[in-house]
Length: 95
Image (cartoon, rainbow, N blue to C red; front, side, top):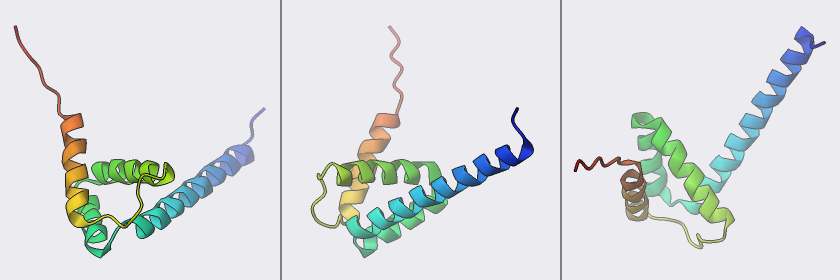
């Protein structure tokens, strides 16, 4: 039987894990982005938070795979964003 205390404990545990994941992601972003790229990401979070999250996760995967060696510039972030947007576009062809 699941009690209210068990549910509260699970919720607190999930919140703690989410905060740790966000902290780790923030740490990775501080390592791989230069100042202007960080500013671009912050602006993106205000306008399109879901796209910013997608970008952060994508960059974190690249970093963990060892594919990012030096800090990314704002221009590189813009290029990556344009590629992410291309993947999101849906094209319907009528015959």
